[in-house]
Each structure stands twice: as C-alpha cells, then as structure tokens.
Length: 181
Ligand code: HEC
Image (cartoon, helix red, strand yellow):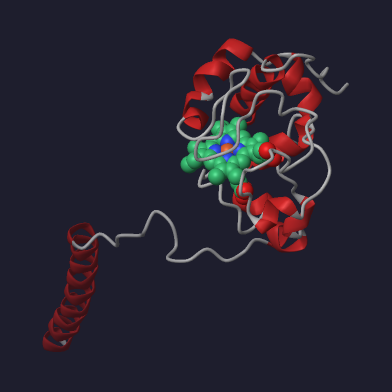
C-alpha cells in the first residue's frame, strides 16, 4: 500500500511536471517567437460601404467657373506666364507670324483667320471665333481641342494661370472684349 501510494504520487508528480514544463515552454516560446502580425492585412477586402457606393457617386471637386476665375485674374502675372507662348507667338500690335500666328486681338477673332498663315486642317475646319471659353480650352491642351494641331504646346494645367494669361490676352487688343459674366 505504502509503495502504491508513493508510485501514484510519483506518477501524479510526473504528469504535473510535464504539464508545467509544457506551459512554461509555451509561454517562453511565445515570448521568443512573438507572433508578428502585419500592421495591415496583406490585402484589403472592400468594405461593404465602399462596395455599395459606385465610383460615379463621388464626384471630383467642382471646377471654379471661368467667369469667376477671370474676375480675379491678374494680367501682369499673365504676361509672365505668356513668355512660354512668345517662343512661337508675337503679341504686340502689328506683330508678325513666328512659328505660330500673331496673337494681337485674338480674343473675338475668327479661328484660323490670319491670311497667309498655314494652319493645320484641324484648326482650319474648326469654325467660329476665339471666345475666352475656347481659348481656355485651347491652352489647357491644344491637342485635345484640335487633334492634329501644329501647336506643339503641351498645355497649361493650372486654371488660375490660364485665367491670368487670358487677362493678358484681353489687353492685347484695340477693342478689348469684356469678360463673360
Ligand atoms: C511651340 C510653339 C507654340 C507655343 C509654345 C504656343 N503656340 Fe500657339 N500656336 C502655335 C502654332 C504652330 C499654331 C497654329 C496651330 C495650327 O494651325 O494647328 C498656334 C495657334 C494658336 C492660336 C490660334 C490662333 C488663330 O489665329 O486661330 C492661339 C490662340 C494660340 N496659339 C495661343 C497660344 C498661347 C496663349 C500660348 C501660350 C500659352 C501658345 N499659343 C503657345 C505654336 C505655339
């Protein structure tokens, strides 16, 4: 009986010891090999909210209308920005064609109307007069307005700068065209 008890105790101790040892090991290995969770999961699953909102429902910030931009445009800044145009255009009265046609009085002038200047078909077939709206479109990206144009100018993407250039163009005229309201 005595022997049996001792054996039972030994077995119990051995089992307990093993359990304890396993626990200690588990804690220690967790400390050593701390599971490294990525800050973000590898890929983001679209949230239900995003999936429910079509892209078209989130419009870009509305652009300021041109008349508003023109109302606060600065012609003297525009003159500076128009230096980029002067590589190809003259602005002064009586100026002649360079790479591009002379631009004195261009606001209100029929498109592609300088006699003797060899315009591209794209510009020749456009028709109408140069309004501020059209000039704004034009200098935003000439090739977008008239695909095949000869005007090798990539465009001015800044709407405020374009308005400043248009304010400068307004002054290059005998009878300046008022800004649209
Ligand atoms: C690299 C040369 C070049 C630069 C820079 C350039 N242009 Fe031109 N521009 C041209 C050419 C060439 C044409 C004729 C385009 C055609 O026939 O397709 C033209 C045409 C135009 C016309 C049409 C004129 C008309 O008689 O119908 C306007 C307006 C104009 N440019 C404004 C500008 C302004 C404003 C800038 C500066 C922001 C500018 N251009 C920069 C070469 C240039």
